[in-house]
Length: 197
Ligand SMILES: Nc1ncnc2c1ncn2[C@@H]1O[C@H](COP(=O)(O)OP(=O)(O)OP(=O)(O)O)[C@@H](O)[C@H]1O
View (cartoon, rainbow, N blue to C red):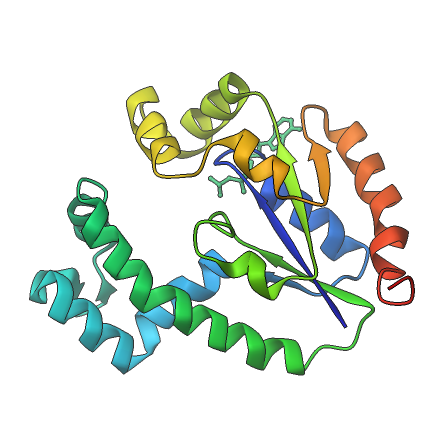
């Protein structure tokens, strides 16, 4: 069973495209959601994060995401160490999920697929793109955040061109109908990837 990584910069429309694949019956693993669940529920992750960022990183209800983001987004070394805790845990969890799927291929959606090295565990990578200005506006509207906030998040991701060059397929997501068409065209290609190797 083929593993297809799905990535793209913030606001490119990864979740939107992932939903389209899911509607075609493709099993989809959303790395950010699973990472959040592991942070809430896995005691060894909690222990490691508290050791790295202090007791304030967790409230009785779970991780304090605002506190954690405040700490790591201004300190790249700390972000790297936090990722060093979370990414291997997600990779292990993904392998367990993958073993339970039955389909020609599965999709692993990850905002930081290349940045985390997750692409090495994928047989092919699909990248979703949209012009930067469009992405900024979408995220400002979706999350009601400032332009500066979005730019800060973009600065923590690899450059679009660098990621595009490393991807096998690119979906341009500026118009939802055209995006659907690209997904429908790519689906049989990905379904037959295993046989064509
Ligand atoms: N083609 C499109 N036309 C208009 N709006 C879109 C389009 N694609 C996505 N959007 C909207 O833009 C916002 C960002 O899309 P989405 O959440 O899918 O992106 P994402 O890449 O998963 O973002 P993030 O990296 O922040 O998780 C959402 O509110 C979504 O509904």
